[in-house]
Amino acid sequence: MRYPASEKAEIIKLVEQSHLPARRTLEKLGIPPATFYRWYDRYRDGGVEALADHRSRPDRVWNRIPDDVRGQIVDLALELPELSPRELAVRFTDERKYFVSEASVYRLLKAHDLITSPAYVVIKAADEFKDKTTAINQLWQTDFTYLKITGWGWYYLSTVLDDFSRYIVAWRLGPTMCASDVTATLDQALAASGLDHITVMQRPRLLSDNGSSYVADDLATWLKGKDMQHVRGAPYHPQTQGKIERWHQTLKNRILLDNY
Image (cartoon, rainbow, N blue to C red; front, side):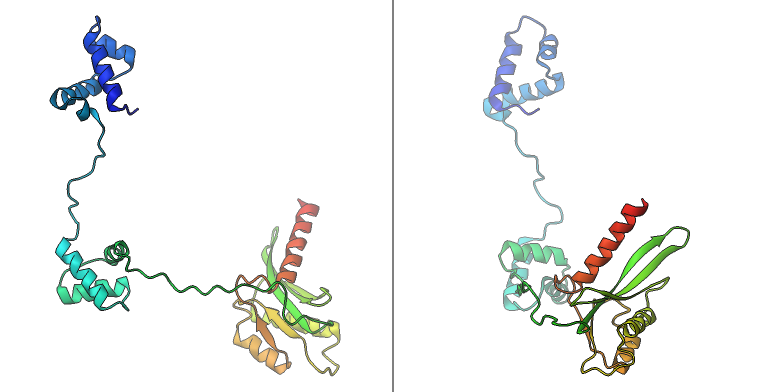
């Protein structure tokens, strides 16, 4: 517990004026003798003012960059404002033969308000899709989800959902999550919708995320052969595969409720 200087002075007076021995008095006050005598020495040397606590700190930081070197770094930063703290540290070390770290340069420039804030571009997501689907088989959403099958391990559910009707056109459960699993699910979807043997004005567009199986060249080649377009959503964008992701989550919750 820290005591202000005035309370320390009062404790010293109580001990001086007490009819009990100093140690007994300190025991009743709950003050360790070593602490009291340290206060007492300071009180005798400097009075009440010497009893005030002072923040302990070293007089000198051993590895502090000298002021003249700090000034040279600032001058170099002003001369070459296009350089980053990392580039300035390397440049200064090479030219002046004096090593300074990137962190030291950054702190120095920040203290002199020479660090510019990055130019963030704020992009607000729209409240709804710009081009909404108006009929079935215009846009298919597809995605994978993970399922733990007891005694078998992890299996992957590949699903194709119609964006307009939210109908599950096709699904496939397998031990892998490859482009071949995507094309196999799409083959089932084309067969289930009848689009594998009829001629239509426009094939369904495929909407997916940026997973490795969806950016594979094999899938791109397959889609080109089927005359299907492919669009991939931006990561973390709220208007990508939200419908199929919610369906997958509902499916998992239903499995948990029924079986656990």
